[in-house]
Image (tube, rainbow, N blue to C red; front, side, top):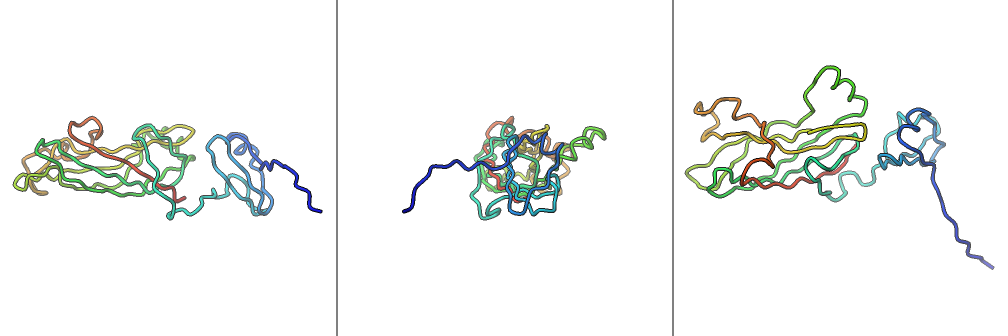
Length: 200
């Protein structure tokens, strides 16, 4: 006769600080859960905790998750970031565009950035069309950038250029105004939505 028994299965868990300090070696197939960063790792019986890769199911197959710009904290790692952008800052309508980048930052690099005064990591420059009137299409630039970071992870946001140019080789604006230094959320008639997938 089979008897049903209720049981609670609890995997090994601890704070990020304790795991980092103790740096245990998980047995083969033993799971460990970082309760600070909500990270799961699976042991191989050889590799210590700090050198184990995080377990990320499905990676690129996973659905896009919504990111609240400048608010959502991403645990340190590598992410595919997608921005859906509509820029009507010229006040003549808006063309929509999609920007996709890989953004990455490792927890071990925090002290290096602070010590050397480095700028936060960012993706490459993207050129896009800013408005919707055929005769006055403005070329503007955008960049996905890490806006801030702390011991838990980092936040990303979108930055765009202050001004645009009618042609990419236009000399009618200062170069600095064509560089994406303005937080997109601070520019009137600019709308954007950020999504992400963790891949590492």
